[in-house]
Length: 101
Image 1 (cartoon, rainbow, N blue to C red):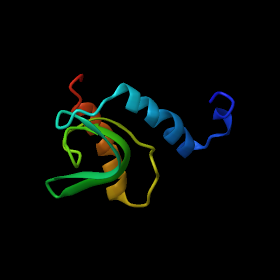
Image 2 (spheres, one colour):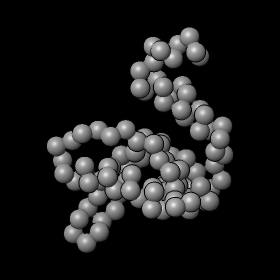
Image 3 (cartoon, rainbow, N blue to C red):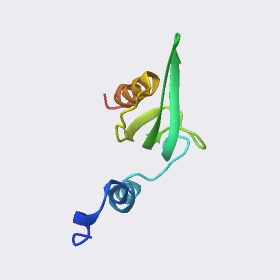
């Protein structure tokens, strides 16, 4: 691995190193927590909709994420104000809802 890591792009680093490492450290125990990949999540607060697609998420739930605990997400600039707010909310909510605030 050390001989190849310098040549990896971001996606290869995630797939070949980060996700396997997380899988070793975190064993899914639904419904207490489970890891989810490449999922759309969002929330509506009043008349404001916040949403985004996250790369990796540790959350409660069996088939779909419910309450997030921790996430990995690459910020992707977008012209959409809703998407930008969604990305901000996702990072903030993972901290807010974490049991180890």
